[in-house]
Length: 217
Ligand code: C5P
Image 1: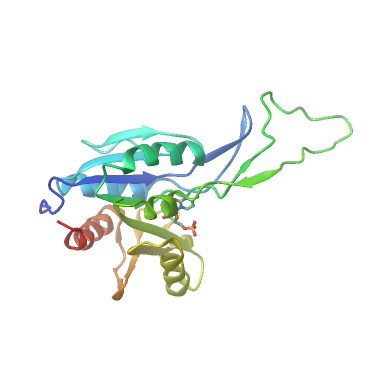
Image 2: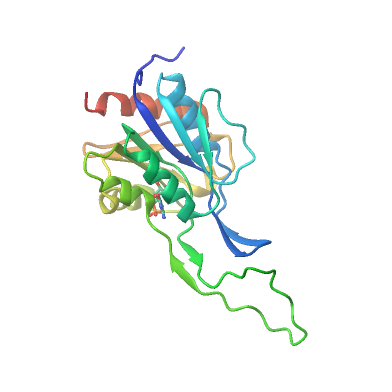
């Protein structure tokens, strides 16, 4: 049984990877199953929140009672999130957003050529969705995620400060990726709290219970 700690709150969650086109059949993406973000959306809904989930491409079913908006690219995710963020009380940014998109993406399929030359891709940075929401005036209470391969606490705290968010959740990429279990660490102004290894849904429930008392009335 989950206490309804987010009753009446509006929670916006991003999940999954983004997909950045090279041409109509090829993309650049991140390795993300979406499992953690979907678990966060489910846990928020169980806690009584109205939940909107902005999702990159995943193979996962929509959690019961959650409103899902599908996007492909980071720029589409940014637009969907900015449109929804105004009315949200909490924004939990779990998506593995691609850092760059291909500027010279082709409208037609790129062809192999006989000389064996390869296409030259040019990249430009994507918007930082979390940082943009964090700097909204009267915007939602923001929670970021960071998957690191080393120095987890140090890098996650640096990221929390850089993004200007009150809470950041860290995990080790090599453990969490596509797994059903995860070991989260929650960082805020007061320090850090390490959770044990849990299923992603149980870890998400713990996260929601930690967020709820921090929200303004
Ligand atoms: O430093 P990094 O960008 O990897 O921080 C990860 C956090 O920022 C995650 O919460 C992720 O969802 C969010 N993010 C974002 N937009 C980006 C890149 C990351 O919202 N373009």
